[in-house]
Length: 287
Length: 287
Image 1 (cartoon, rainbow over the protein chains, first blue to last red):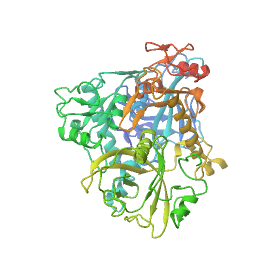
Image 2: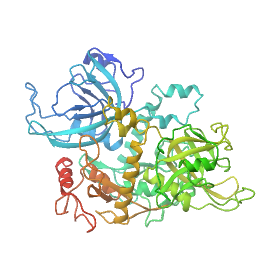
Image 3: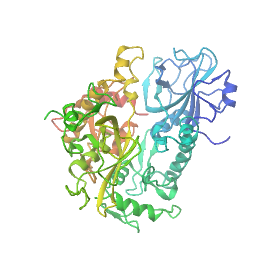
Image 4: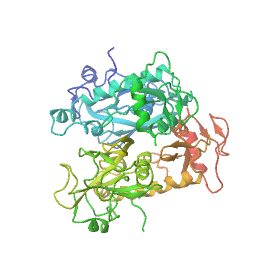
């Protein structure tokens, strides 16, 4: 199977209708032929299909409360067991923790005024803002996910000259989504190198969906810093040290000694850091 | 002086022109008659005026690199000393750390293709995404702030029925901005009660602009939880424990003992917590 793609699929636009699950799968908008959630508990979920089903679902259009997978009798479709936060459900939790977009497709048999009259409609990107468990109407636990419609990510295209051809293109095509996917792979990579331990304090944050860490750019991305999206410009930090690093609570010497905190940065041999970026941070982020 | 207002001023719209600083001050869009930054280092900055001036400024329209205050000779307007991260500059750093919007006004004497031909134009709300120091063209340190245009906060209005009169109103009036101001006062309050110490681990995060903590809702805001914006539904946490709390890494018993972590929640006598909200969190956010 080819690599999981987060964000829009090139040449597929919001509102496009597919006549069947097979057509939807061929388009790559939602690859599984039966499952409602496409994803893995390591990478997150790239797409979901809303199609009737769960009694605890709620569809307000721009906000969706989506019920997770599992615990239903395949024949009666009734909830007959508790759902757990694993597999495809955990995938959606990973989206929430890592701000990954998920493609939403509504099927005609989804019971909502926002459903299409026919087939399966691609309804664009949503973020997962929240997830929690509740005792469902059936008497069994279900996991729920709050989805919120994402607008075009103008943050990413602001930096292009508004008169340039790239600007017009970026507002509708896959340019920014290529960026999402590339960044996310790097982000995963630096966390894997340190197995989610903070390079400053060695803390590893535990959540109900596994370990949590943040990838921090040393020389920031974007105008006017224009730091690169590369592994030698990334650190694996806990949220506390990420905030402190971004707001000049500490900096790093060329020999990795910390300034403003005790100790030194833990750097694995396989993780080469570019000292030019460390110097940039030191010169610009302290008082 | 009346209370500082963050966000739009009622009945003032983007694009409105004011003929002088006095007219601008009377409108309450930018109250000081001379200063470029309106704000305090405790509360943050509510508005700024771009008007020529600083040699390190950059105005790309939706992105602005804004030079901080200080160090200039009042007669020659030349930079003759280092700027420091205090007073009005620190106010803008507080905006960055607390995601507070700042009103931006461009003056006709501001050297940019985005400036008005005449007077002072209200150009809407920006967020401060980043701040840093650099050796300016003058040879002295200046503090720079990256501002990014804020769109209408659709997140807040998503939850209104799209057919309702409130929806149309919320897209243009001050409804959502009243909410910003009310929320921010509460957020400040809970951090003050604990003097920025985390109620779980007592850590106090230090940045180059002072102490940092986060206000965490126990029962989340918004559909479908609809937790209230009240002090008895707020905790003062460090970022690490905020993430863990939101993603079910720990919960709290009625007697404030922690589950999933050692120890108990530190709660001051003056801070009454509503156990109904604690119970809600316990029931919905653990596996």
